[in-house]
Length: 108
Image (tube, rainbow, N blue to C red; front, side, top):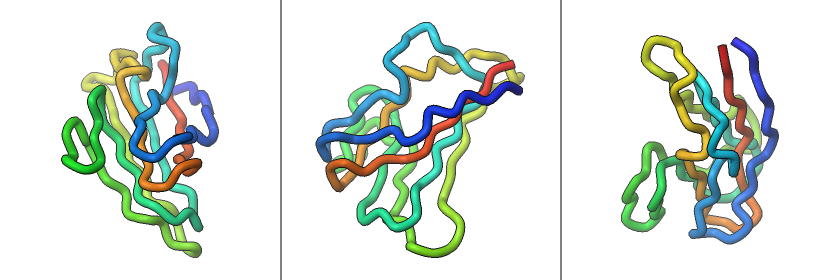
């Protein structure tokens, strides 16, 4: 698998989800999302229509990460290992403006 490191995907305004990619042609066999130690708020990963209050379209909620220790992470993997995940279909939201997560996607 070939990784593409997007680095920090930032949610500019809390409550306004951002896509992990703005390029609808990018497909992957896996997407890794990891929290950044020391940030203050919760993060939410999901699809279009993600709402952190009702949890509509939410896949996972990360609680505020601790300052020390390993970060929390979540990997979405395509069945069969094909590049069938459209990266722009996944959204990130945060409870604190300016926070985000580290994102890497993998292609075969």
